Length: 123
Image (spheres, rainbow, N blue to C red):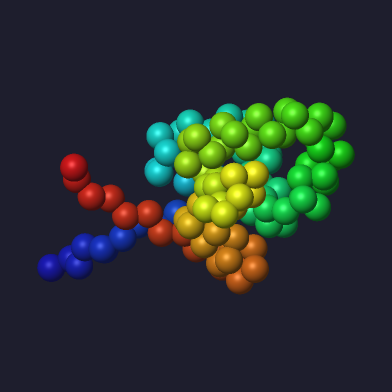
């Protein structure tokens, strides 16, 4: 009698840290947020996941992506409304990654993890 596997494995190649974070964001967006992440929002989140949400990172995003601060503020507003960022309880201007994206940062960027498991459950 043939033993049936309990899970299916498929591998995704990546070039560097930016590439793996982009792929993780695409998967996360589809699985958890119904694919509602625009390309530009993904670029901004990629910086926050790799470098942390900080004034320094925001300045780097403005410089490297060639935007104005108000455009980044607007993007952060939309990312907050979509649930990717969360507002600080102490200061509305301060934000952070949501818990799941913090975990992606912790395990994949800081911890060098290379496996992301997706489970399926019927509604």
